[in-house]
Amino acid sequence: MESVLIDLAEDRVTGALRLDEAGTVYLTDGRVTYAESPAVPRLEDLLTADDRVPAQAVRQARQAATEDRPGGERLVGQGVLTRGELEFCVLSAVLDAAYFLSGSAAHRRGFRPGDRHWLGPQWYFDVAGLSRECERRRAQLDRAWPSGELDTLPVVPLARIPAQRVVLTSLQWEVLVAADSVATPAELARRLGRPAYSVLLAVRRLAAAGLLRVPEAGGRPGAAPTWTGAPAPAPQAPQTPQTSPAPQAPQSSQTPQTPSAPPALPRRPKTTGEPRAGGEPREGAVGSAASARWLPAATGDPTDVNLLIRLRNALEALT
Image (cartoon, rainbow, N blue to C red):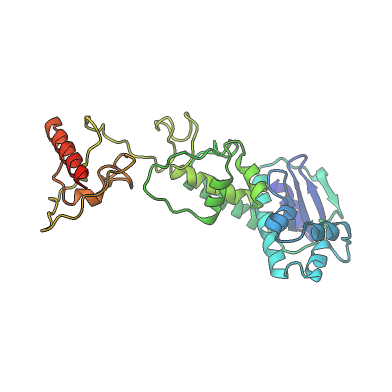
């Protein structure tokens, strides 16, 4: 496709290059002014998502668009959005479609002179610049998650995250909330009214953070069955068997400090948990930091563990 676009740019043509079922690239005087693909949401979807722009206004602008006054001019003239907002949406939509169109087969005979997009030229793109941006985006995806296996699979969040807390971007939160273990990244992009590439990047980063279920045989060779990519969760050493849940001090080289007056005995936690990587207990774990500050270090010996359990139960019975 790139070589055909370069030839068309040199001839400074105006029209549309049809890429069979992959999509269409529109040119004006040899520069790309719009691109669309079934793999990404349309500009109409981006504009009308969450009622940002009335769908009726977009439909009327498209139907009334002419060469002298294209639909984009009508939308701006009606005041439903500003010129800057329209240009930003066009920029996002074209870069989104160009990424998924890159590498598609194209022939000069697929070019139709004079065909124009109903929006009209709102932004001009250099062919070489579009190619560089596609390469940059491809490298960005590979850095986030070096495999394309998640790009076409349903997005399946984990029921329990392997960390005490996580920090998400607004788009990552939208993806996790909308994910129903059936929709693919492209389907989520249409549902959310977001660019497909942005959703794809968010999905790969969520997988790298260990927040999504991934294929058992995916990603990096030698990876654990359900954890692939980087960074993968560090393997944890087997836990010392205990007769029942008991307070346990965090693994540390420092000696626990004993205050002059012990604080009130903490309530028995309702849930149990595994220590986080690095020895930091998860929130809600039996060996929480609050209780470990005054309890003696657990040795793992069954006699010591049972003694601590009886002592705890006796003190709780007095409260």
